Length: 164
Image (cartoon, rainbow, N blue to C red; front, top):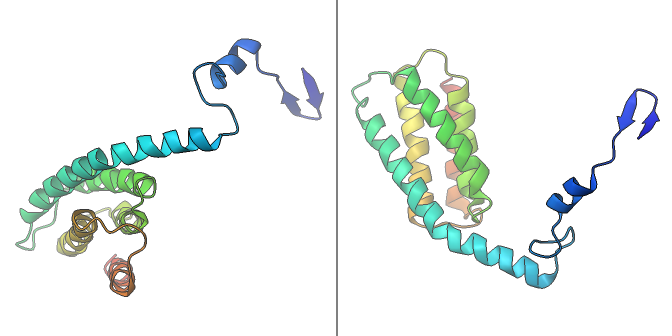
């Protein structure tokens, strides 16, 4: 154990090192091209399941939000659920080659995170975000999309800012 000022450096035990990098059955610290290909294959195989599960979540959120189309404010419990789902979609979108999904989910999460007392405008703004997420997923728009997608993202962010 070495000590520098107030910082204490503790060396990991041999057992911990063996668990962190298993050269017999796992991957090493530096990935070979073959190991990289194996990992990419796992991600690609999981992509369909990701799309299906996120699609189901978005459909459920759309159904819930449709109950509040009469100008009624959604309950805070639904807003919290939307925040959690948006955060998860934001975190996973890039992994499955949907960076546009990540950006829209970030915009949605940022918007709902600041809501303290839901109102009718929240229903409209959240609904547009969910619809945009659904379209990106249904159309399997990978990458950042084009001009239309960039304008859509800009419009969602502007609406989120204007109707806080």
